[in-house]
Image (cartoon, rainbow, N blue to C red; front, side):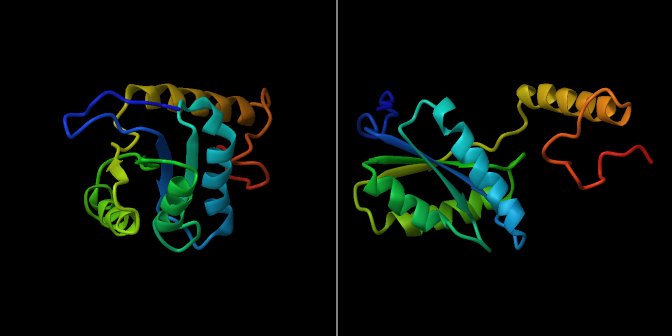
Length: 156
């Protein structure tokens, strides 16, 4: 169980769950991509409960993910936007969805974490991705799973 120090608002948060949320898409493959990322990387996070969610257009919704977290024993839910930068989804939309979801669970606390960027770790990801794509078009590497079969990894 991940315990966190007092944040100044009344004690440690108890069992922390993380919801990783993206926008949601009409493309099932885009939604499946987030869900697979969460399934395959949840073990790397130091929290006992990790759930995927989509803001709109697809399930699981933030409300259903929040419900699953509470059913699994969470007393605090941290919502991690799967977005590169801050914007209206981060500062308005996700907090509104979280407030509505938490209303069904009195006593469960929540927060919306900062988006992924800007973070220097993203520069490493970009460098690795670009190097792999350049190696692929030069015949030194296979297509990555994201581009496989799409014909997108091509110098034009």
